[in-house]
Image (cartoon, rainbow, N blue to C red; front, side):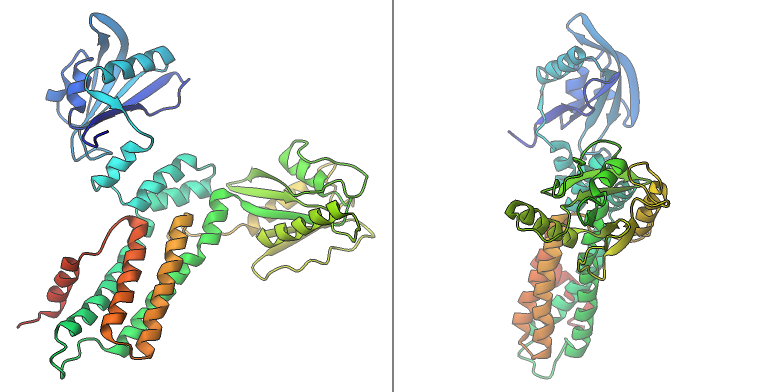
Length: 428
């Protein structure tokens, strides 16, 4: 398949009243014109045209065709969007006609891939398109929109400029190494700059835990002794019989997970096996998994009932613990008394982010930031140990290349040279 092909695909879910078929490529407008009652290849960009789609003399549907011309389209290519009725027969017939008239079916994600390749967005923004489509709550939608608008790209661009300055200074010094009286790179100044950049990268990497939770659901572990109402609470929160409720101790042998949205936040609840001493090997395995679930959780619901102590479970400083005494006048998981208060406590305990915050939600981005931080640590150590400029420059390039993996960019030698001569005016 050739990336210069003209491609087409259904852009809306099948089964609705209306459907939109997207066409993109250098022959997009000509291909649509061959099956439409108007030659849209001669029309102005950013216009909508009414007419009929035809198979020879047979009218297939009454449609609207939106026209976009390169580079002012989603893909950066000539494009058209056909709005037609959502009948499966009509949609399939339109795609068949387009494929008979110069198009081919698009591969998964190919429209966004072309947008990236044509410079309409960087790689992190392209990934944000998928996150936006998959967003299930206000928080995940806001994070996806921030990334799509270039939030993380802007942050990385700032880091890139600072790193490029450091690299340029060191490479400039290397180019003039035969002049012993010249020192372009002040090591103390570079060390302070490297520490500043390291703090910036660390902040972005540390935001991943929050971003991942807001995107996929904040993990909440429900823990306590057997029969204090953990499974009943899970069922009450979910509004369905998800977990088995029994008076027999040790019924829950494994962690049961499910998600629910409360307000604008998605929570991922984990009902765990009752914490107690047992000689039952299977139940013991369930308790071990309960302890592991607590370690993964950001919020821990500690459940008990009158006369039963709270479980003795170690929690981290960064975890929120909410204590619940079930089977009392204030709280009854079975009847729903106190559930509204608990829901509000959960929302209050959810991570809060400002609209201006740049939050990392993508595991690939997080991994690249961690590797960039490791490379930068070698730079900081090298500056302290007076390591030669060529080795420092190599580590700095690794930092730049690793960060560039996130957006899909690269640092070229000519860019370093351009930075050198634009900032330092060598030869004056």
